[in-house]
Image (cartoon, rainbow, N blue to C red):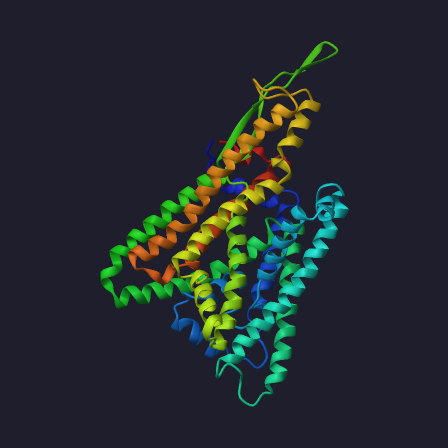
Length: 446
């Protein structure tokens, strides 16, 4: 793996003036700014200060802190974007899983081209609305249970109805902004919205950490150790994102007239971590669903058998518990394999067919089925290593927070670190790809 030289001012100007890139960057920043503006629009009749007091009293180490990740801080402000990108991401996961299980959906995804993908996108949007309605009802019911959350003198029924409608509409608008960024901007819209929300939360984490160190100066060295661990983790994240397994391909020689073409060995690069940070985001989105439901059920003060079941389920899915992190790790591993299985450039049979079609081959492997089997073994081993490594990397910062007793970065802070680095790398790679497509190879010379 080769390094990339630091860009000069001339390189940056060339990047900015590259055909189409400037417009894409401006559009992306504009959509993110619009999203941040929506975070400042509060729900009607809700006492924002009261809710923020509850969050601050728990230092963010609860289910609300995890939900706040997908809303970019909108949940903390009880804004119309409080549900954030969560319903859309959850809907995307479910539709993709269903496309693997249901033949008709699989046909839409693999055989009907762009028209089939548009239909799947439409199904995803419809299911997003359903999830948004469900989650908004749960959230409003949770708020209603908190005494003092509704402004005095306002009809509670009107608050409930308007809040559910506003939250659902806000979630749909966030979905629309996300799709616009993906289609007309640079990078993955959903990931960038989460990335922007994490950046906006850095001052809050900094303030909490500063207050903790002021109250307990003895933790200063613990904080320095935690920062070193975070820095090393970032290095491993970069390695994970950029590492590839190269499979050598022998290309046949072709003679056209008096000239001979081909015959040069190339390679197929298989990424060690094909899903990037998406398995982590997907794992959080899936785990948030039972955690959110349990947070609502907990308000009912169940007793007897129902109470016992709730107690154990809450213990399992509590974001601060050890069991949660075991499930989190296993889900990251499973979702990494799932993400690799649906990527078009990681299908052994299709790659083998294409190699046979053009007369290319892997050294020492027969074309056709043997090539597909060889590629499948390579991809399985590569993905397994990447999945385990990604899962471990996701756990290291969280355990480091417990060990050093610097809990202000606990849970969501550790996850944020990985998502931030991963999304930033993905954005940089997309910009590099755009520059290469526009004949700006000199910007990327080693």
